[in-house]
Structures are given as C-alpha cells and as structure tokens.
Image (cartoon, rainbow over all chains, first blue to last red; front, side, top):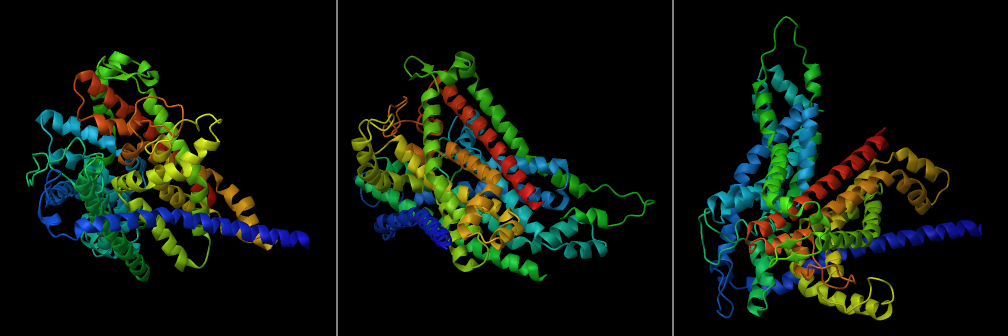
Length: 284
Length: 316
C-alpha cells in the first residue's frame, strides 16, 4: 500500500516538474515580446519613424523608411523567383512523388532548410556581387530566394497532398489532361495552404540578417533600385543595436518591434487559415 | 498518396500512352533545390581555394587568426561553435523533452494547442530580435544572476573560473538554447506521437502510473527519434549566426572559461567578411563558411535519417 502511494506521489511530482519545465520554455517568448514592445513603442509611436530614412546619431527625426522599402523590394524579388519554382516543385512531389528522384528532391529541400544562412550570403556574394563589382539588393534576393525555396516546396507538397484523390480522379475521368487537372483543379483547391506556405517563407526571409549582410550591405538613404545597396529591417536592428549611441539603439528596438509584429501576424494568420483548410479538406 | 492514381487509371495496352510533358516539366523545375545545394558547395569551394591551397588541412587546427601576417586557422571558431552548441543542447534538452512529452499526450487538445502555438512562435521570431534582446536584457541578467555566482563559488572547476563577462560563450549558449527549443520539442513530439498507442495502453492496463509509462516505455521507445531531434537541433545551433555574433564577444582565441568572450564560425564571417581585403583573408573566411556548411549538412542528413527511420519503425 505504501509502495503504491509512493508511486502515485512520484508520478504527480514528475508531472509537476514537466509542467514547470514547459512553462519555463514559454518564459523567453514572453520576455522577448515584452521587451520588444515596451522598448520599441517610443520609436513606433512617432509617425516620422515610418516616413523618414535613417539619420546619423544626434540628428533627430530619423526613421526606417529606407529599410522598409529595402526589405519590401528584396523580399518581393526573392518571392518572384522562389514561389513559382517552389510551388511547381511541390506539385511535382505531391503528384509524382513516389520515385527515387522525388526522394532526392525531398532530402535536398529538408537539408537546405538547415543550411546555414550565412553560407547562402557567401554564395550570393560570389555569384552576384563579385561579377558586378558592387553590393546590391538583387544579390540579397538571390540568397533569400534559396532560403525560401525549401519552405515553399514542402508546404506546397503537404497542401496538395491534403486534397482528396476523388477530385483528381473526377477531373481525369472528364478527360482533362493531367496538367489541367493539376493546375486548374488541384492547385486552386489547395490554394489557401500554398499561399500560407509562401507567406511563412516570406516572413522567414524578411527576418533574416545573415544572408543580407554582405549582399545588400545597407544604405542610409531611401532607394528603390535593387541594383544598388539597400537596407533592410534586420540590418537596421543588427547595426544600430551594436552602436554605443542611445538614439540609434532606440531606432533598433523600433525596427525590431516592426519585424516581430509582422512575423507574428503572418504566423498566427497562416495557422488559422491552415486549420480551416484541413477542416475543409476533411469535409470534401 | 498521389501516386496511387497511376495504378488506378487503367490504360488499355493497345493504346500507347502519350508522353506526360507536364511531368517532365515539373520534374525539371524540381531540380532547383538539389542543384542549388550542390552549386553552393561548389561555388564556396572555388572561392575558398586560395586559402585551401595556402593552409591545407592545417587550417582546421590552426590557432592563429592574424590579418597582418596573413595566417589564418579555424580552431578558435570551431571550439567556440562546438562549446556554445553543446552547452545550449544541455540546457535545452530536458526542457525540450518535457514540452514534447506534454504536447504528445493524447486527449485535451485545447490548452495543448495554445502551448504548441507558443513554442512554435519561438521559432518564428527573427534571430536578430533574439540578438538585441540577449544583448540588452539577457546578458546583463545572466552576468549578475548566473555567471557571477558560479565564478565566485565554483571557480575551482575547469572552464568555470575567470572574470565573468556579459558577452561570453555562455551568454551565446543561453540564446541558442532558447532558439533550438522549438526544433527539439516539435520533432520529439512527432516522434513520441508515432509510438504505437497499444504500447501506452497496455502499460497503463498493467497498472503503471503516468510517469512510469512515460519514463519506462514511451521515452525508451522514442529514444532513437529523440536523438535525431537532438542532432537536428544541434544543426540549427551550429548554423545560427547573428544572435550569437551579437553576444559572444568576438574574440578569436580559445578561452579558459565559458564565461569569457569567444567566437563562432558563423559569427566571424558575419563580422569580418565585408572588411576582409585580400585573396587569402577572404578565402579563409569563405573556407570557414565551407567548413560550416559541410558540417551542418552532414549533421542534418544524419538527423533526418534518424528521425525518419524512428518514425518508420514506430509505424510498423
């Protein structure tokens, strides 16, 4: 009897420890969000922060407009390359993905997800910056496109895989060629999942610093030309945070808050859409 | 799943099937991922060649990092990378497994879903945000409440002495621990979920308590997969760049204490590449990148094999 009591007690005790550790795991999330919001708010509360470009320390009125534009242009260019290629690769894996080649593609994209992003930066530097002899937004886009590619491939594959076979079979039974079944029937049905996958990839690319460091390099002035150096939001956070100047550090916290809000918005939104998609697919 | 169509559509033998050009087209497109992986390694090797030729295999064990004399060795960075990742794993492993066990429990998904979302959001936060938080919030706190007490009382133990610093190997390891936690717990959760239900149920039926079921049956059954998750998390830790670069102190030497500044492979590229002049110096930095990518690729492939085989075995 006493042995059973001891067993029950130790089980509850272990459960308590497990719960405590799990709460401990969530503490950093709370702390990061809390400090980014409280320290970033003073910057973001000022509309000039979004309208002006960066200014040197000591000159008031500095903002991050140049970085927002830079991030937008660079990530848009990267998406233009990565999303179509990624979606078609993902469709291939879902439609014809039984063979050995498909497994190589899967392995490559799984490995590519874990590839150090700084190495992608070195690669884009060698491929674009060296031949052009100058830093550019395009070079950063090349690095970020490779970063996005595996995310888009794998999310597309799983989104298309969720579509019930009946839809494909009815299309084929009507005499539609495979490409039309795939692109006009299956892909639209899987669109919410594919789009959220693409958005997650965009969020990931927009938050990356390492591949942008020596490709886009950074630019204090507002520039829309991807053939020139550009700044991005993570670059502002990275460079300003490491300066000894209080006003630039404040700017870094503001940029960090903008980044976090964007990333959380995309992530929570996509989670919601994906859950709906899975529920809808079950009903089909 | 999708391939089942091929076998269900019956094509009469007499009519030759037209070539599926759509299949060929998408197959060619899907070359992009493997091709870029190979291309990255080839291009980095080519860029690093001046350094590879100059230093040979001695590059890996060289301890000098001197731009003036043009002698470069990667050992301090390899040391920093390995030590920070190892400490991060030691910190993150118990927490990650606890999270995974709770998330994998059957039933009552409401609270668990929120918990899982929280952990996954940890993975979504950009590393530079972790960096600025670690630099201004975590590092001062850790210096006061962890590093100073330990160096005061446990200095006799090797690697725990010296003068504690805000920017140190240990601070970097702390941030890394937070950053690899989502990978660790999400993959472990999937592996634990793949453990057959019957195993859990029969153990409970024999009268085992919750903890006995977890500790003596579930975790041993999921052991190989959890090991795979750990290796995957190790790969993430090795590759992490900017968050580490912001708090590790950037000193290219092998320190005598984990509370002293150090350097990692990824961080030195991030900090020095733009200013690197000369073929040898740049080549050495790219060679560091090459070492980094080859190590992480190996680690990742190993982890994927472990996780896949663990899931496949559990499914049987």
